[in-house]
Length: 359
Image (cartoon, rainbow, N blue to C red; front, side, top):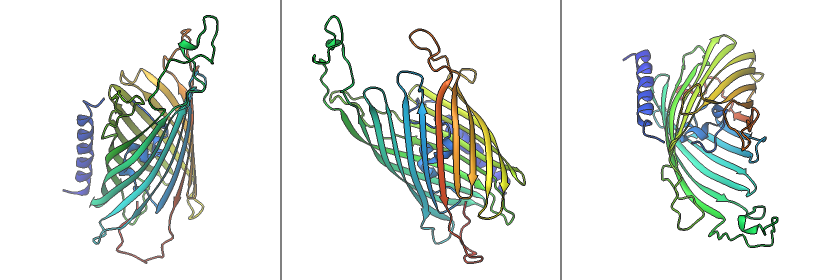
């Protein structure tokens, strides 16, 4: 089987497995419109799959500032590659992930700290298969000080000195979490440099479906979250790339789909002075079809040397309305920022000619 046929076969096999296996999956929780810039949120199999030696990532999202309950999310992550095998056909990867989000008068928050591990094997020239595992823990908590209850209404007005009538067993909940993932990566490693890459993958998070409620007698579980995704960078001109991306998130009956495209112009390709500007547009929609959308997302990125700076804004186009039946968000969805720094060791020419190619 030649390289081209094998590549086509692998792509088709991945799509069949992912789409077929997710027909029964049933959404969203923490999510980023710039999901390409938060790869460890997609799958633990993305740990170590990048061009470089160490990667530091940070993301911030502020959503629905125009409605009574706004949401804020931060993400920080780190990953690296190490321990190539003796045959130089594979390597291990590892990473750390921290997530934190909070919302509402109760200051309901969720913090997550996790460790990702992966192994990548070169299955054929230009083709790499990665399996990943994540182990982590959540802390979910809320505060009572700013909440108001029916029993605190004295017949005329709210009276904070009255008992709320509520009895919470806990205001903090800890639980463990397990995730797995699979990723196929394609990159041409010929003598002529190429920026073209493809990634198709699957991440299954909350595999253990942990119990997450504050009440001791409540067995509400955190459902499994299925992420499928496809990422492509295609160098269509010597200084221009086409960026394509798509993702699907499935959790119980909730779904979220996002598709997007962008163009990247390389303004400077000189070593240590690399500069590129990227402009794109994405669209998020839900389970009822492409026409029933959630947000239109213009986005921009600046690539300078080893840095990436991303900016996007969700323009809400859904039918989300408030109690007065007016559009609640007035189009204002969410601001999102991303920063990635990739550390690349300088290699001496011909220092290790038999070492495995980097991504």
